[in-house]
Amino acid sequence: SEKKVPDDIYAPINNHCFIPNTVVRTIKKRNTANKKERRRTQSINSAFYKLREQIPNVPSDTKLSKIKTLKLAILYINYLVDVLDGDQDPKSGFQADLKLSNRKVYNERKQRNENASLLTKGRTGWPQDVWASELVPEQN
Image 1 (tube, rainbow, N blue to C red):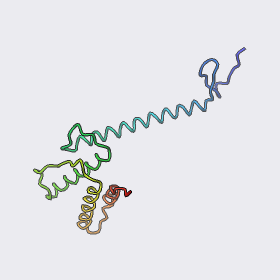
Image 2: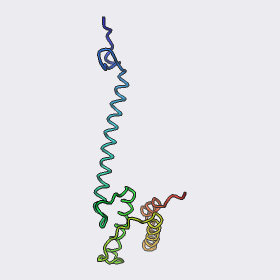
Image 3: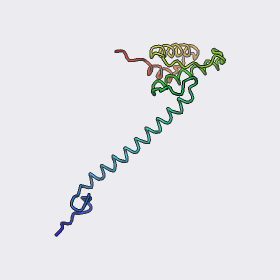
Image 4: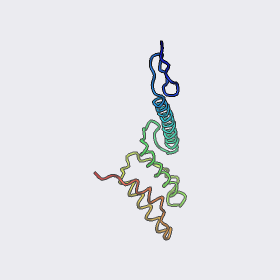
C-alpha cells in the first residue's frame, strides 16, 4: 500500500517523490526575488536609454557605458548651466567628447565646484562636492 505523506510538511514532485515545503517556499521566494531584480534591471536600463537619447551630438551607433552616459550627462548639464549663466554661447552647441579622460572630467568638475563655492558665500554645495568626489579616478 502507498504511504501517505503529510501535505503540511512535504510537497509532491511526482507520485513517488516529495520535497520539504520549506524548500518549495525557498524556491518560490528566490523566483520572486529574481523577477523583482529583472524588473529593477530593466527599469534602470530603460532610464539609461532615455538619458542617452537626451545627450546631443552622440552618434546613434555609439555604445555608451552607464558611467560614460552619466559623465556625458553631467557635462551636458554643465554646458546648459553655462548657457543660462551667459558664460557659453548657445550657438556653439554642445560637443559630446567621447574620449574624455576621467581626470579631465574630474578637474573640470572640481574647478566648477571651487568657482561655485566662491559665489555661494559659505554654502557648502554638498551634493556637488559628493558628486565630484564620485568622479575621482581610481589610482592604480
